[in-house]
Image (cartoon, rainbow over all chains, first blue to last red; front, side, top):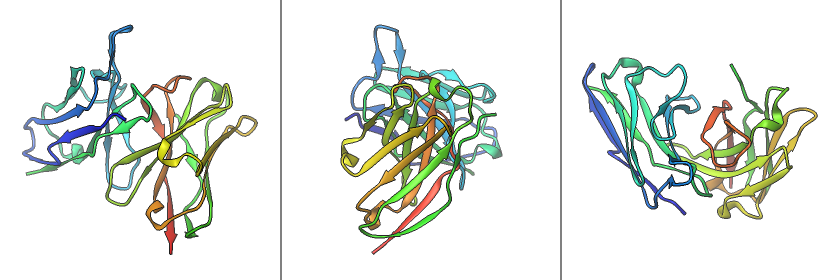
Length: 113
Length: 121
């Protein structure tokens, strides 16, 4: 099974500052035949289901603000919020969809300083 | 905007079974796969399994093999997840989540609103 490890567990950032969340997979989630990384990022606010922000490691979902960006390849990935807004307070999860069983990181809680 | 609507909260005794339903929009039901994911209180997400309505086949996480059954009713565009031999540690919010295509290897969008299942000993 692919284990997804996120860091840090929590993050306190000032409004307008950058937030960076890391995700590491125990095996590569890159598929050479189509040159894609099978990695998504989700945002979950309290009492709500998750919402996809990024898929294929770096493609922003329609309607997601461009302050959210994803990068990385193989086993190491990053979600960056370039200028944290109050509405970005949430827990963020990475997910690999390369290999069954599909699996998620443990989450990173982002709060405002 | 696509919505998946799940059935309401359940309270069960250990050893019993629970069935959670997830109503999907009609029209293109068979163009997608549907997953079940659970989240224990204060915890992360655990993928349970997926169904491909086009073929009527399901694939389950080994942890739940033999205890979970996922089915799809194309006539009502509803997906069901039955979990048997419930234990207190099965207490969680259960989500259905649609994949973006008819393949298993996909991200999830959208998710249902979640169904809290509470298991008492």
